[in-house]
View (tube, rainbow, N blue to C red):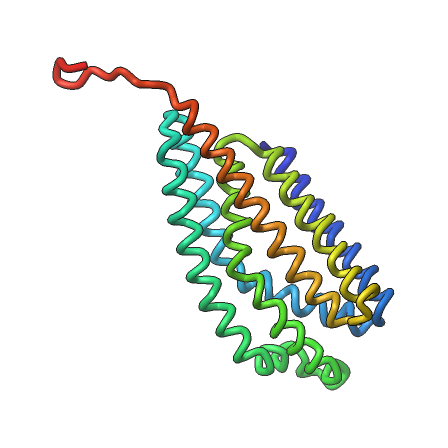
Length: 222
């Protein structure tokens, strides 16, 4: 469990490097600065999901340990519902306050010229906040049930494959430039999160199909 988790963090760092290369290919260093600042805001926006994910990991671990597999689906659905509601609220907040958020990070005179670019980033990136709940919390359930490798694969597919791929396609082949990178970021994260959620859903259904019949003695009755 520890090794896949460490590799997940490493894959995210590689994603940053690849995204920077894509941005430089279609823009300049200002684009890299916009991405760095914008992604910092994104990480703050999805911070509540980290806390929910820890809870999902803990609860799913208990449920899996006692082999009460039928309880896993309610855990996944409830956590995902709460995560989507929270992230939808944060997304709306971010969209309408994007200019003001961007201004906070560009108070220096040398950074003032990228304020509008950061605003544009925030007004596009907010779209994948709700679906991030599906992907991140699904990965947490994988980890809670001892499927650290599955969580790692899901992260690699989303972060190292889909996101850079869509960013490159939108920005280069569709000629959308820096804006295309942001749309690629959205499409890659949304598709990756939906795929992860579908994968963990099928995994839980498979566990439920093989739930052992329990014979328990309660007050002398079988």
